[in-house]
Length: 374
Ligand SMILES: Cc1cc2nc3c(=O)[nH]c(=O)nc-3n(C[C@H](O)[C@H](O)[C@H](O)COP(=O)(O)OP(=O)(O)OC[C@H]3O[C@@H](n4cnc5c(N)ncnc54)[C@H](O)[C@@H]3O)c2cc1C
Image 1 (cartoon, rainbow, N blue to C red):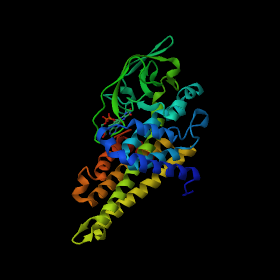
Image 2 (image 1 turned 60 degrees about the vertical axis):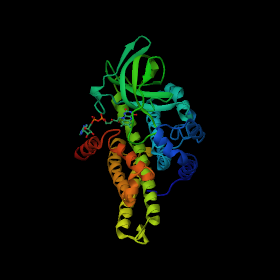
Image 3 (image 1 turned 90 degrees about the vertical axis):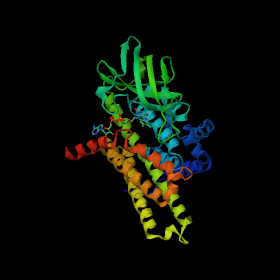
Image 4 (image 1 turned 180 degrees about the vertical axis):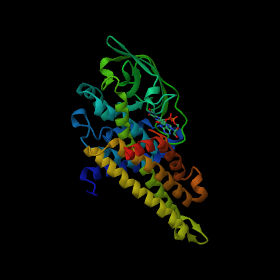
């Protein structure tokens, strides 16, 4: 076991932190208020070459590992979880193609995804299904030269960004996965949902109206889409946990700063044992979350263990632990933690998503318990 970052990991952490502090921090409140990533910021972000960290250099990637990807999401999310979420969902689509695409599909999609010219998205959820593949109603009909796609997807983050969508639809043999360019004929989106947090990345419904997909849009084998969904989301849960960790760390920093400045009865509240206890509680939850995430990510990077289980147990723990950690940090702020002028208020809203997205915590418990009981 090695508890030190590699040279590459330190480099990416430092580079993304410097970018987040100088370029993202001044815009973070605006990203949250307007629920939009400014295009100028996106252009700057592309220059960092962080859109394809774990993919092979021959497809335009950085040839790194999931570990560097997770560190990047953590650093961005310390400053703006909206931006971290945007990147995490980009990786959800891109990773499905990297893991399951043919050589031709990787050459077709990955270079554009790695440069950030194309933004990735991943559409599984529908109005009547968040986790049950049997309930999928989107339909891809086999025709001579490909498939005709019809139906609607709910809550597709980045579905309104130009780029590539990985989606799931019923075919004759079961649910299949498809990868294709968004905004071709028959593709349209709703207006963005008004979200509680992680505002910045737009989340929309997507409509498919006779979208013509060439045969090479099929990802993996026909009827085997559920396996692609599960593995894609397993990596996705590491990124969701990285957003949580970034939020936990940033909120604790805010709490410590506040505790040293806020004077009550002539003394900073940092001198009160009760405030110190709140800070210690938050810190323990952050530290336990950090090592759980880093361990699972290292295993995923090295292909060790059962990633479906490891990412489920990690997300299950971290989503709740960091929700509690941010709650402690908010408590340190007293009523000021409840108003928009203080960053911890935004973080409290951002973290709530993590217990419901990519499978609610109850679904993670089912995965964890069935692993324990098998
Ligand atoms: C901001 C945001 C962004 C999103 N982005 C995307 C995206 O990019 N792509 C995408 O495909 N989806 C996306 N989603 C959808 C999200 O992943 C699903 O909503 C999520 O998986 C939960 O599905 P559901 O809401 O339909 O919950 P349901 O399946 O309706 O579940 C409701 C509740 O029932 C319980 N429950 C459900 N199933 C079980 C079970 N098996 N065992 C025990 N209890 C259970 C849980 O308590 C759960 O909270 C997004 C959602 C949001 C809010």
